[in-house]
Length: 590
Ligand code: DQQ
Picture 1 (cartoon, rainbow, N blue to C red):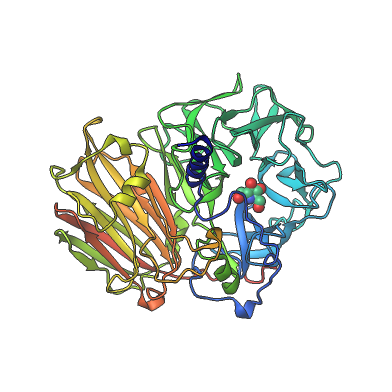
Picture 2 (tube, helix red, strand yellow):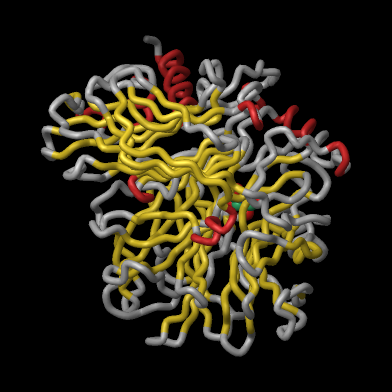
């Protein structure tokens, strides 16, 4: 092959490799659409979620500065008040007493000063003793430089923190000569180091193609100085957006830890959101507070193949510590995978996924995630299934509920694993390729088995979420693959003209680290019209899909359990609940 041709093929491969999960590298700007407002009356209810966090209309992206203050939960989010695509971004602000019902307040932060006139982008909140909560956020300046600013509440006695002030001594951090002013954003919550009396926080960035989280230190939370070393960086990962850095307990299997925890029995988590792939990954490691160094444990890849909070449509996530219930709670954004044209027609785009608690898994090598228990207060009518044996090719319908809006939790028993297929090691870091090769209809030994969600009765449309079990000679353990496959989810014709504006119907996948010694594996899915959030093996592997069925809609949607493996699989127990709508979901948001 001649050199230029080879170069072209290489470029193509690179482009294919960095093809993202439905959103463009950074948010695509649709100039003509960004201020095309939708009146409340013309917002389309089709595919709108019932119990996920959404404003009544228009575009949302990253969750910002989640926190608990005087008994009130706060969630800010990147919001376009004028249209259903990214643009005109402000910090919308909502409050809640139960993380279920949300009241919209006035936007807390919006472009108005030289230091944020071209954008008020993502950031975090820190409780600073004596000052109350302080927000750090990215401002885009008059000359399009990304800098870090702070904002403080006007009235600390107001639990709703309605009004925020952006003092004139902003910014607190500007990019220096070595830093890239167009890739320098999303400050984390700060943590306090008692040993030296300094606060520290991180800012996401890149140098060439190396992802970087720079660290800054401050005594008074105003004057911030760059640390000699970034907390971490990684070649070939591109821009690191929305970093998050927090401790988890090794011994306490119930409670989370505060950001500033500096005691025994803790590991640290560094999560970054990769602008190039629009996936996130995290490492677990040791943070030496004296030397101020973070070292990943090295059990899992530090890069594109790393562990994920969620292997599906999940981005720009952020945690906070709830000191009332001692939980570390995670928020994450799911963009639409519908066409941009249809987003504008329906008048809304983006949801926040159900908040999840984070704990360290008993293996110490990964995290586990579980929907916050408050969500169970929305459970209504319940139906059950027990001891239902499924031979190869059988499926059973879960009847008596409205499957477009349910919480379903099932435990399967796969019996022995003799028939499990041999695992091909070349797929060890490629769960997605394996899933694409062996979908829900490709018969196997043990599996595929799982749930068929948002389906028509004849499976013209359906979104299967399933497991497939292999025998792994290398580890002598079962290798369990989990997939959530949107490919058959919709008959909708794609109207997108440009590939980036097309409807996106991907398969998502991750491995599940379970021994299956008792033959059991659980799967819980939160199904809400256009979203399926699935938790495998009690939250060891989580996958979120966005789907847009044309027929499997509302009352017409069905839910099944199925088995397409030659080994019979038993539904040991299944519970499904209709989910109610919260009473308040941001009515009146601007
Ligand atoms: N979204 C924000 C940025 C962030 C990106 C802008 C991640 O601050 O890097 O809306 O989705």
